[in-house]
Image (cartoon, rainbow, N blue to C red):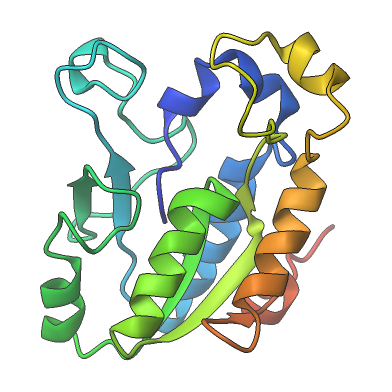
Length: 192
């Protein structure tokens, strides 16, 4: 579970997120993994000393409300886009005999996709659950960083969150990962 943290909800572009219910989606996947006896690993992105939303000193580098790791479920912090490079994730997976990883979290095209690619390069079978990822509209690279949400949306080059997610599936499928749905991985909850 990659970067499903409060840091993102403090930013103005959170209002453009495609899955504001990401905690519910991740919980569904987590419960299915636990039911199967699979290892659940929680990853948090940190940028120490920056003073921003990802600086642990500001208190936002914590799981989104509603997500509760069980005792024994590792919580690791990273400073790179992927969950492997600056962590002990690979050693942890090796210790537990893991050969397949299921990727979900925030941002679909950034930390989730990068983790999927690196995981594939490391030899893992990678399952990417786009429905259990979240992202926001993506501004064209030439737009200044201080652009408002309104300016980003007004630019015809901006990709919607749905377009970003779709493009991510296009580049991962058959190359780096297998795309699966929540329904395929998690039992559909019984309603009364």
